[in-house]
Length: 188
Image (tube, rainbow, N blue to C red; front, side, top):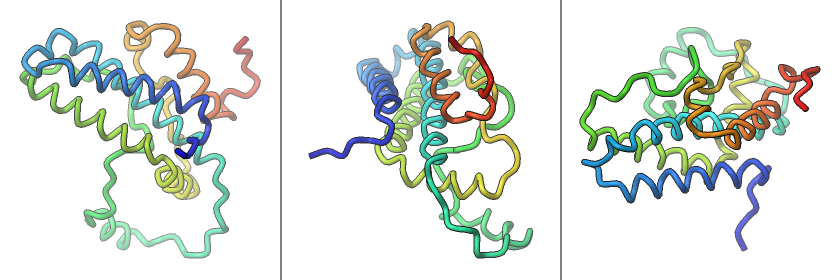
């Protein structure tokens, strides 16, 4: 019997959206990708933000034992940063401004298709086994003081392109991932 994922009310819609994106990419010939590229990129940006917030919700529920080891020195961090085993395929912290279509895709449609397909497969892998990512995030949040998530998960045009259902899911996940930031807000 398959194991029920944590927080299925968040997991199921994200999994359905991701399955739809992967099916769309599989049915599209790489040469014909240019016709659906803006929608596919918007869906991928939104799905990445959703998965990242889902991992944050899971990490919030993880109780870690007190940190017994001292914080590594800057020299130790440099050694670890160069270690290939320390690099991960999915960034749990958001960087800079809101994500979503950093460009219109100057690469050939076949290359864009392959990159989006690879990113969708990576998201599917994270969503299939979110617990290790949540534990990694919980440990990272214990050491970091900067906000791990942006206020605006994706740019406004991405949300407008994908519709109000996705926007509602994004807001619900964001409120669950960042409860202190949503405290006192009337979202009714």
